Length: 101
Image 1 (cartoon, rainbow, N blue to C red):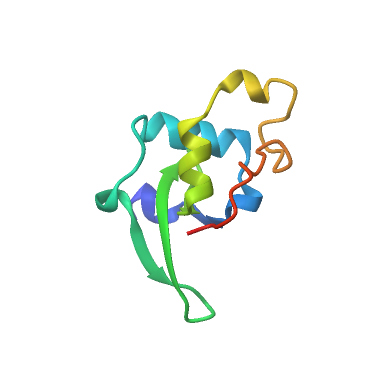
Image 2: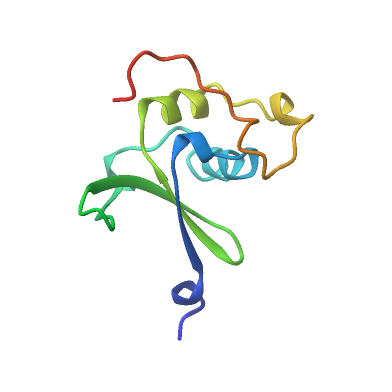
């Protein structure tokens, strides 16, 4: 079995985005993501979900795409997260957009 096949798979919504996952996204997609990076799949509720993928040693994260995610990645500065733990979902603040599309 391929190591990539044995990774834990986690779907991450913007509300659960941590500094660690955000840093991985910015590192993998330094100029943002485009349609070629987006994976579409059907979740357990039979809804179509669009996400971008980042991988650590043991986990494959599928981060749901949204305008909030794109703006947060664009404005990323690692210094903004120094006071937080890498796994703290409260650290990544909503960019204050009125719509998430």
